[in-house]
Image 1 (cartoon, rainbow, N blue to C red):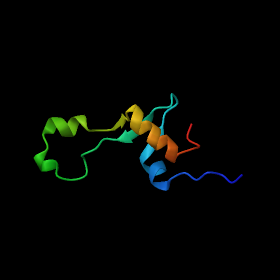
Image 2 (cartoon, rainbow, N blue to C red):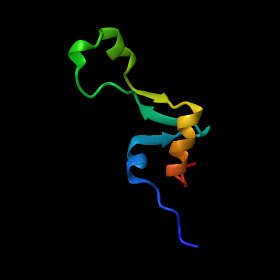
Image 3 (cartoon, helix red, strand yellow):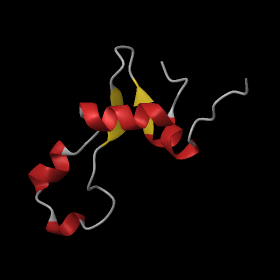
Image 4 (tube, one colour):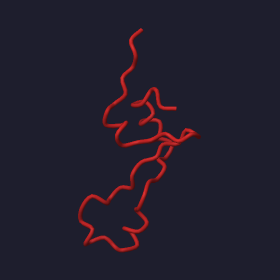
Length: 66
């Protein structure tokens, strides 16, 4: 049986934690910072965990992520 391929876009954007949750960068930080509040920019630092439904989609893209 051939190996399944991991989606290259997914492996660059997501990381699976030891407990199996999926980490992703916060949305809304690419451009247009001038119109965003300082509070929004502060709270959107770092990474966040995806919800269960999105997590299942991402995990299907990354069959070998543990």
